[in-house]
Amino acid sequence: FYPSLVFSLIALILVLIAETGRVPVDNPATHLELTMIHEAMVLEYSGRYLALIEWGNAIKFVLYLTLVVSLFFPIGLCTNQQLGWLTLGLLIMLLKLFFLSGLIAFIESINSKLRIFKVPDYLASAFMLSVLGVIITQMLGASL
Image 1 (cartoon, rainbow, N blue to C red):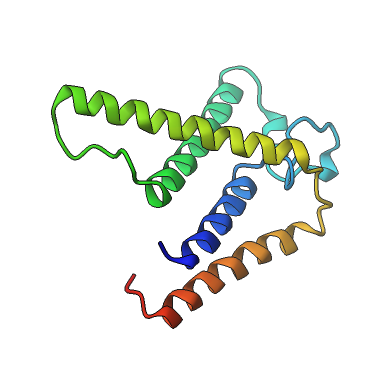
Image 2 (image 1 turned 45 degrees about the horizontal axis):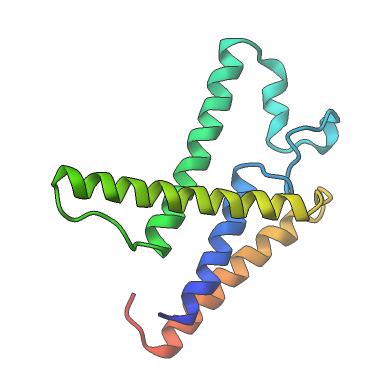
């Protein structure tokens, strides 16, 4: 366990929230075009094209969650190719994804939407946390 992993995890979760257009950065339920960041491009679509865009956003969210879970919580990843172990690994992965999505929902519910001019500060804090994680890793002499 390295302390830099905590900084990297927090930075990646901040990037996940920003990149998927969640509440502290963007409010998908807003009706004001000036405050939209990610949802402004969706206004022109309806029907199956809107469904494809929403589906793509959901896939992006699940892929980011899977990246976070696989990098920082690799416990339960299956290395054996037997059906029982694969099923157990899938269940553990789904449990971790469910827990992390609950954490993201909790973060969304306790935060209000940032003003559009504060979003670069939010992303700069994620960048600084990741740089701090790299610096701590190099100072401790740990191999990446």
